[in-house]
Image (cartoon, rainbow, N blue to C red; front, side):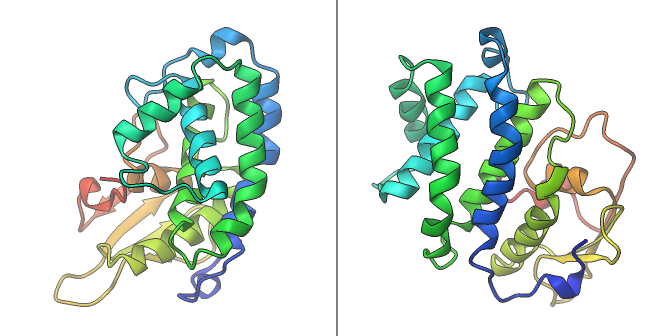
Length: 226
């Protein structure tokens, strides 16, 4: 597993694409076997959106990245709603097809963007967790992609000067350093598992998760999407 020494400040350009590839191999087969009503299930982490809406948003975002379409207001709530509406006439299978293509093609584009699109890969992986949870599938915000996701999260929070946190994770052998240390405020402390840490950093519900401890920082301060 990843340790703090394995999470350098220097960017690994292949990591976002690797995360997408890992998730594609797990998520797409799961979606292919689902009935139409499953795509209509609500997603708790995205109020007002269904599973299909989340998948359409994800596939559209990746397609935009691959095609280099980053007009003003891209990824705003209004833009996201338009992307979903544009796919309203598509079959569920067509949405999944576009998602599969995007998860395969976006890696090299993100790698060449110098870090500007790394958060997109992490966001896609988190949305896959949203879908898993909505479908009642295990492994939400975890699974084979968790080490890369945690490493990417740690680097992004450091680059953004996020509040410092030391996380003692059940999933790792050594503590994980997130955010930017320095100043008079000591780092916060988290004790728990990796998926719960991901939930806290992405504003996802933590009801019913395994017990965890958070000290020296409030949950709302961790949310990178807030």
